Image 1 (spheres, rainbow, N blue to C red):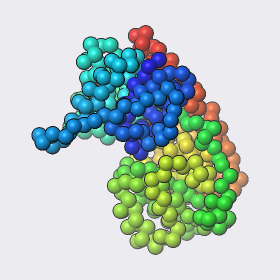
Image 2 (tube, helix red, strand yellow):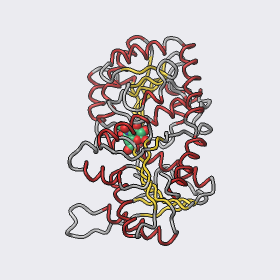
Image 3 (tube, helix red, strand yellow):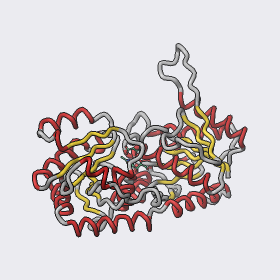
Image 4 (cartoon, protein in one colour):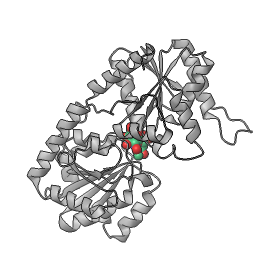
Length: 374
Ligand code: GMT
């Protein structure tokens, strides 16, 4: 098949999933065309069967807000005509599903549009009156719609009163790449052997509750020798730094910034903290699990479908920071429990969320859409 993929190229779960899906499809012999304003950050090397098409947004004095959607749709039309795309796969409803609709109209219907909903496009933007009607329309006018968890499919149906089917295709992890590595050297440069390493990876938006991560860690390090690794950056970072200073734990918190490769960091970590107020799936939790790292997370959105409570970690209400700290202490003070949960976590990642299985499901779904069977 010839598949166009439109996604956000910068840091963020939806872009990571879109890029990894494209790479996996290309490895299976499909021709994949990424179309975006920049090369997706996970696509840093040459890949057979993969082409990148940059969207150029001309500047013009009248454009206070350059019309990216139009430039993107125009590029999709151009690429589709030149390479005879079968499918355009839009990741994230705004503006990509809308772009799919527009491009298909220009092409007289000669392109099938599959939209994958990732979470915040529905849960945050979907309830914003500035976007809600256009999101509903774009979802309904797609030829096929997938969601990354059962919970997100349910929320989308309820929020937009959508009757047409939404296929759930879980996010996935390449367990041959995300696996526990030998990192004793690196770990010894960060802390002493008896120190527990906690990790939080996100885009530091309010929905991730990164300040709560600091409060949870503060309680944990009062009971056990511990350090916290913070990976990523975003709008809440200044508040996070302020909280770290207020609590006097700057020596124990390491700010690593945005990192392209996190397998080593995960491999040296004992526990992940993910106290989000919303999380349609929690790709980062799955990546931690694949590296044998248990997760303390919120019981929200799709997280219970990923982090099986009591096996891969523990889940709490997002407001229950004390519970999360207690859960972390329980796991970190019992090496046998931590080890057992790590093994279960990896088993779940491999058995339920393998790249092979989920990518094959996307392939079958594309075929159904092409045969008008959705
Ligand atoms: O988590 C974010 O804020 C980024 C967002 C995105 O734009 O990629 O992530 C969403 O999509 C990911 C990939 O499907 C999911 O793993 C995340 O759970 C989801 N984030 C939220 O629902 C908050």
